[in-house]
Image 1: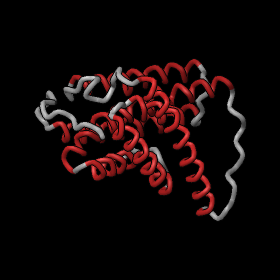
Image 2: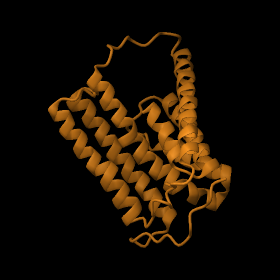
Image 3: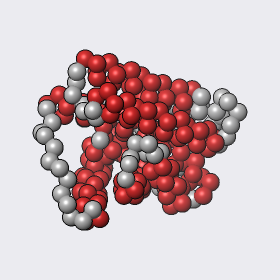
Image 4: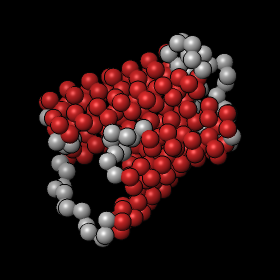
Length: 225
C-alpha cells in the first residue's frame, strides 16, 4: 500500500501542502481549458503537425509540462521526484504493471463508449477520417508528455498521498479521482465523460496506491492518451 507523503513538505508560499495542491488543480484546470480552446479554435482540434501546430505544442509543453510541474510541484510545492513517486527500484515490475494497467483502461474506455452510445439512443457517431502518421505520432506524444506527465504528477503523485494521509486509503483515492474529473471542466462537454474520467482516475489511483511507483499509472495513462 502506498506510503503517505512526508509532513516535512513546505510549499514556498506558506500554504499547507494540501492547500497548495488544490490551488494547483484550479490553475491547471484553467490552463488546460485554455489550451483545449486554442487547439479547437486555431487547429480545428486536429493534431496534424504543421509548423504552427508544432510551435504551439512546444510552447504548451514548456508552460504546462515543464513550468507547471517543475515550478509548481517541485520548486514552489517543495516535492522531490521521489516524493512524487518516481523510483528506480522495481522498474521491470513497474513497466509490466503499467502496460497491464493501460490494457485495463482501454477496456474501461471501450465500455464507457458503449455506455454513452446506449445513452444517446444507439445512434453511431459520425465516421472520422483515418489519422495521418504525423497525427498518430503527435497523439502519442500528447498522451505521454502532456496528459500522463502533468496529471499523474499532480493528481496521483502530489495530491493522492496527502489525501490518503488525511482521510485514509480509499477515501483519498476517491477524492483525487473526483478532483481529477472536475479538473476537466472546460475540456469535456458531456456529463458521461466526467463519469468516465472519474472511473479512470480510480483505476490510476489504485495503480499508484498498491505499489507506490508513479511510473505505473504514468505508463497506463500514456497508453490511452
